[in-house]
Length: 327
Image (cartoon, rainbow, N blue to C red; front, side, top):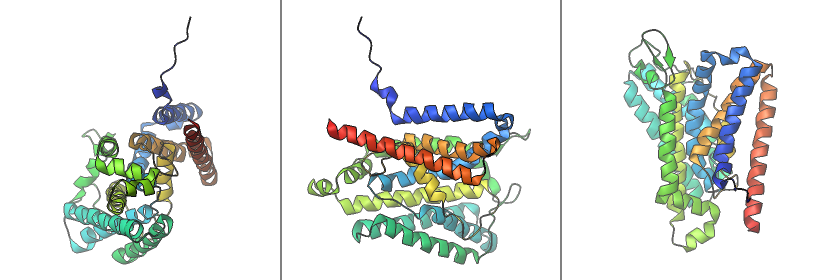
C-alpha cells in the first residue's frame, strides 16, 4: 500500500512555533507547581501585550530587509509624553493617548524618510532615532518617573482595556483579545493589500520592485510608519500594565520584539514573514522570560537561552532559503 503523504501545511513555521509554546507550557508546569498559578498567566499576559504590539509593527521593516531599533526607547518616550500631559497638565487620558499615537506615527514616518528617501542604512537611521526618543523621553518627563492614572483614579478606565477586574476581584486579561484581533487585521494587511504585497516585494528584491513600477520610497515609509504606530500602541499597553514609566529605559525591548518576529517566521534577510507567526513567536520569548526564574535560572541564563533560541530560528530561516534556492 502507498503511504499517505503528510500535508506540507502542518510543517508551516506558525504550527511548529505553536507546538514549541505548548511544549514550554507543559515543561514549566511540570517543573514548577508555582508556575501553574493563575497569577503566572496574568504575568505572562502583562509582559506579552507591549512586546506583541511592537513585534507586529517591526515585522514590516524586517520584511523589507530593514530593522527598527527605535521602538523600545520610542515606547517609553511616547508613554512618558502622554503621562506627563495627564500628570502635570491635567489632560484627559483619551487625549493623551491620541498624542502618544501621533508621536509614534511621527517618529515612524521620520524613520521611513531617513531610510526610504535619504537612503540611510536601516540600522544607522533607526539607531539615531533610538537615541533621539531616549533623550526626548527624559525631556518630556523632566527626568522623573511618570505614572498614568492608577485604578480608582479619574481616567484609569484605559487599564481595564487590558486587564478587567470583576466584582469578585478576579482579573481577566482582556488585552489578549485586542492584540490577537490586531494581529489578525495586520495579517490581512500583509497578505491581501498593496502595502503588504509591496513590502514583501521590496524585501525580496528591491531593484526588481523598482523596475516593476512600485513606489519603493512610499512603501518603505509606510512600513516604518506602521512600526511607529504599533510602538505607540505598545506604549499605551505598557502604561496600562505597569504603574510607573521611568525615563532612560526601553533599550532592549526592541530585541524581544524582533526576536519574537524572527522566531515566528519573519525572515532575518527580508522578503517573507507571518504576522500570526510573530504573534505566537512572542509567547516563546515571554514564556522563557517568565518561566526560567521558576526553575532557578537567573537573568544571565535567561538571556543565553533566549539567544540560543534566536540562533536556532535564524538557522532554520537560512536552511529554508537554501532549499528554496535549489528548487
